[in-house]
Image (tube, rainbow, N blue to C red):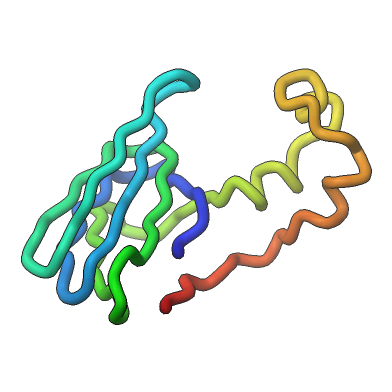
Length: 113
């Protein structure tokens, strides 16, 4: 699974090479779309829309991601939470301060079945 993340500088085009997967894209606080993919499918996500991808098959999910940018940039939910002032986190998400030190600021690699 690839953790919840977004790309602030480019739309994302995906080509699914092998396996089966599911991507959920968070459009707004009340609207999300979930899409199933298999080898040969193409996916698209507009710039700055949070999404995560999970392997739903019994083999490795392999996909290629493409961006129209001169550099790669992504932000994960975990890194974002760890980098903003606690007062904002509490005001908008009601997360206890004791939880934040446990949030990793390291990029989480994709994991498979």
